[in-house]
Length: 427
Image 1: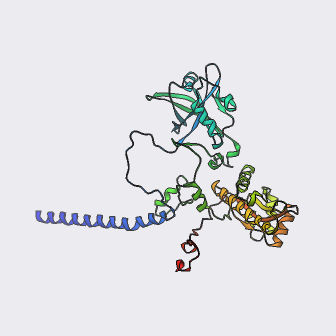
Image 2 (image 1 turned 180 degrees about the horizontal axis):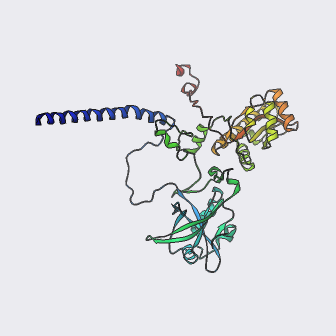
Image 3 (image 1 turned 180 degrees about the vertical axis):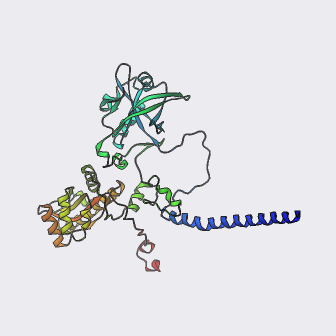
């Protein structure tokens, strides 16, 4: 009987071993290919490798670069730049800021128990840097930098009017960490410039272009890598991310390869400021002899957009788009003779700049041709009342993409030739 029990135990152990082996085999066969397949859209141009110890360094990247606002006991406003800052709690929403006791801001915050977090956009990077290198004991930095101090609505601390995001905090705790004292600030109120908010009060990070502290350099906002609670679906068997870009360490290449012709838009409005930025990008294009033979008609009027959609056979998406730009050649600014036709190349380069800028800003756009179709040219001229010296090259519908349109991989090694055309390279 005892031998029978031992035999049964051995048999049971063997069965378990077989089941475990099959389970691990199935997992390797079924799950790994799914992950590899979903990784196909990811360009890994920074593979892992051998690591080198560099000591006790705080290499958490990116680090926010923010400006702390405070009042002195004399009521004078002061600002300093801090990179040791971040959200430390959700309820109540709290932000921690670490400051050296030798700083004027430390003295101020200890006295008033309040401070503001001011998030700069890239255009204020020099202001931010200066505020971090000059002591408030020596200079009125608001006056020096031409910034406006505004008293907080809810705390005894000033904020910077010109910065896009300001957060009012009251000190709830201080922690002596050694070289720095960390102030835990309970967030009382957050203010954001209207120009940077969408209809649901979400912040458009690409418009703000916040500053990132990288040690050697400051950096700006880069490629959109994925959506929170979405990109991780790459590793789920039954779900796929709604936004899964090709990843490049170079943000310019990322924008180029992620650009796509977007023909499906949400009803979210494109702002006048966004259209202006797109036209600025267009005007940065190369142009023969710097003649700049172009004019740009920005459109955000629903009636005009609808009229254009009716007269242009391949621009029906204007019915959904909330903005558009008509790129025109200005015949009064062209070169003479045969070189006059360079306006087409110049305006095409401007168009490509606009398309890439739209992609980088989280917008969608598509090139719809007008020139050289005479009927389309005349229809656009009549619809938007162009003067006789302007010839419309194209109409670019612009809006917020639904996500339906995806970039295409157009790389074809057979179309690349070295040092002259060689048919043998194609064979």
